[in-house]
Length: 434
Ligand SMILES: NC(=O)c1ccc[n+]([C@@H]2O[C@H](COP(=O)([O-])OP(=O)(O)OC[C@H]3O[C@@H](n4cnc5c(N)ncnc54)[C@H](OP(=O)(O)O)[C@@H]3O)[C@@H](O)[C@H]2O)c1
Image 1 (tube, rainbow, N blue to C red):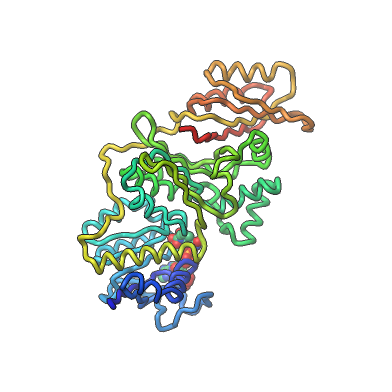
Image 2: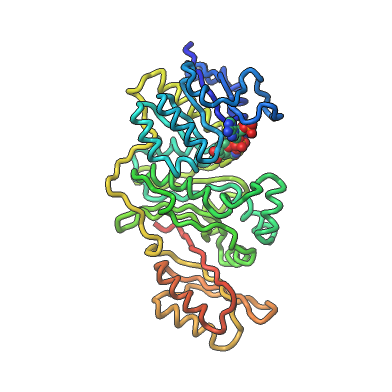
């Protein structure tokens, strides 16, 4: 049986998981592929570190450059994380003509276009299944399974940490800060949580999915992003009363005018929608294709084993591509739309949830309604809960479809009213009406 050698650069959570999965299922994989995958080197920073997954000391090294240079290694797996070092590793490996597997969405989001081009130039390939939605094979779905479809919509819950925090806030009625602290203690959130809770991790993933689905490169700076720090227990409670739940949702939709709408932001989604049932650390991607109709993909978006499963699937593809030769290789990313563009966020039209704090005085509602009416924004429902103490009371409005620019301007005018106190909360609503 043909043997393909590989080096894993990064032997941490995911790297250790990949080593373990290959040890556990190596034979099964070989019988399915007709190729044996053999790990020659695992590159780490600290050789003396105690590792939960035992890797023979003879395989451990700190020298990633020689792992790439070694002619035996046909596949290089980049699992160090971060951007600078990972960029150097992937670049050098591609320039050496090696097949490269990575789980690094931040790297691809920033440098993907250059790296895919480099892979093409050196007649090799870059595989990245584990970079989006962990164990869900969503890259394969878009590249292969739905290749015969135009993608009419793609919605994703792409960050497990945010979904875990929002689920607990909903269940327990607790505030963001307390739940975040608890999530950090339990290992569901990083000590430095901003990449997750500010929506950047989901933005990196949305950019990759959007680029694949629509055939032109979408850089991160063109994606509208809002995190979940400002979502309060009160918002979740009111959303529930209105028949909605709040998710950090990635939305990727071609608009009727030219361009693709792409955003990551807290979004009210109807309780009865299948994505509302995605709880805790789980991820889900809901895709509509013009031929296939609606489809749904669900699973663990991170963690050692789920991510390792995706990396191993890339290793299998890379090994088969190497055995079959260049002709059969599916390129990692095919740019097929020449003048693709991102639709400006401010021009996007959507219904909204608006929470204000107002002095409970006759005429307040009329003044707010008249500002909205002047902006041609219609109100669909109002909640003014009883029994709130203090000077001001919450006032919740659901408004019909409005252009974001018009909504922002109307909210600015409303906040200038003396009867309106504090910061308003504006959250997009997605009713999945196509
Ligand atoms: N963790 C997940 O659930 C998950 C899910 C999806 C994607 N990913 C992606 O997978 C990648 C790896 O994440 P991870 O969680 O496995 O990270 P990790 O646990 O921090 O592991 C990083 C590994 O890289 C090694 N390393 C760091 N700097 C190095 C250097 N200068 N030279 C040699 N080795 C070096 C570390 O060595 P030491 O062990 O000696 O410190 C460690 O083994 C990231 O891009 C991440 O975004 C992770």
